[in-house]
Length: 471
Image (cartoon, rainbow, N blue to C red):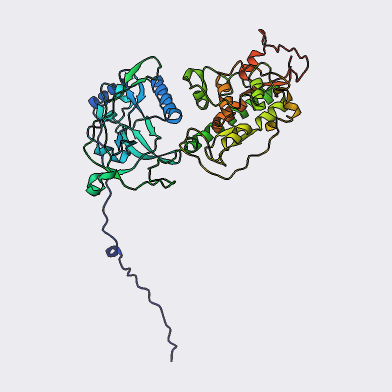
């Protein structure tokens, strides 16, 4: 009987899976409307009336200064073609206390005129196109309220740095909360100096009184328990830490570049020419603008430590006398950082800054910020007896030296550094690096002091007599 053989029969039938697939719908790319020649010509004519590139750069630089240094809200004034201060809408408590209104409540204020952008100088642009809108944006990694005309992708952004009191409209609260009602009073017109420095103009139209009644969404209690409201502490330097560190990186990059050039040329290390940001005293860097005479800084009143060894040493550094390398090392390393306000101080200024039981006593802030810190020991702070390197700056050995450049930006910054106020990190990095070493007399001086100790031919007046010593 023949052996049976099992064969696998393969059918050529293949099931169709088209029924299981979704119905195919071809994707059609939407056609973009092409502008006509007349529309293109109108667009070119409108852009031709915008500010010139040089004017845009100047307006951006001034706005950046107002945002970071002066911390004021600004608006563009078309009559003077410059920035002016913008009045923040105010709320009035029942007890008569004024309080800035939160941007979230601006739409409840009738006829509120927001800041204008410089594009409003263009006669073809309407006021609605150039009126800035307020929104919450990310700036340097931090959430901030920003004003910007997003209707035409404007480059100008006004930053609001003030502390706000967040409020709710009346329709979300009960009438029984009338004890904590706030009102929006009419703001008065003020006259401000323009960005050019010579003209003055009236601020944007005042905000009329609001008829809507609002109240606090969260009751604020004083930490002392007396029931009076307290405003949150705003640490300016801490909020702008990213910008300060960016300035420090820029200074260090410039110094590294200058050192590389010096190493290639085998010449004395000097950055007075063009490599240092503080070399040109007529164009100060942004971190030192608040100390420059052209910006009319206020008279500094905290001069309690002006007779200390550190003050006399830096007074000699900022003069034609100069200091030795050992003296400059002791003076430079006497700086200290306050973790409360993030400012740098001399060792004497840091001790006075923490005189109230380790509290941050910066007078720019409304209250102290407690932290645990111990004032380190430094030889420059010892006056009895002083270190040998700094003995010539002690009042027992030499009388007080006159400071020829006490009103310069370097001199003002050093005076404020050696006080209870201190200076930001970017300002300190710029000041400490703004120095020149003379190979002839082996002394270190500031840029102003180095220029003063040279003769008419640009040579050292000491002529190499007694290296490391003053004439």
